[in-house]
View 1 (tube, rainbow, N blue to C red):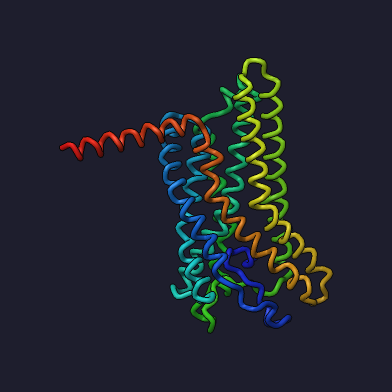
View 2 (cartoon, rainbow, N blue to C red):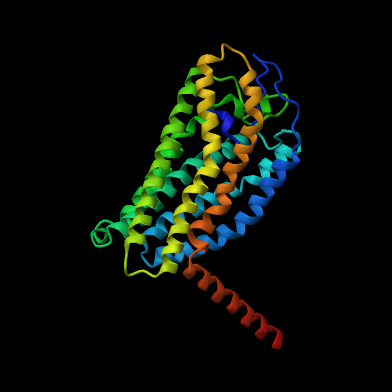
Length: 323
């Protein structure tokens, strides 16, 4: 597992390279995490309610969206700790166990989210392209089993986080929490696996399924032009959203893995990649705030439910004031 994948990581390979970078300005990252929390928390709270209603109505897609929202909410709950940690100059004041649990949640969130996003796209693909045949394929039980399996596999795969010395903040004089360490052959191999299994293959799945949905809908003579435009915009937005949030981070992981074989212990690459790397970490957190917008809140049915809910609140408040 590569401990440099936390959103607070700084390249500071003192043992072989010396201090590579000056202390960065904490305000941009703190502002970013605060914005993601401010937008993502209410959006995901609304979405978890709406998707739970869809699960109760036996909507297969709702199972994946409900699981995705729970995953994002769990991650968002850790952002205040990361923001305070950065603001305090990268000093972790809550003990080693809290550091490891918070890091564990971050690691899990990224890849559970990615795989669930693939499930959403595959389910939409099957429902649209194989509308008749999918009646026997798309079942609530299957969706629940797939979701639980994804969570279990990713969670088990990240258990080594609890054994990493980088999470022992109480034993580190500076009280660092999962700051990056020197690369190794094991970490390099994991970076290759994370790029191809955790990013490249899901990207291919998302691109192919959304393209197939787009082609099928555009060829349909029974759909209105407005509906076709909406489907097209959603398909393009999902792929672009994935690319923007996850491509920079995983490309840098791949470049770091390749650099391990050719660097000969030199640190020039780490110096040049630091700024793009911090930007990529910030972009990866935006995923948790925007998932509800793309997958749930953008739908007309969700908007109608929210509007009715707001109307109900207004009516009740008026009744209370008159009483």
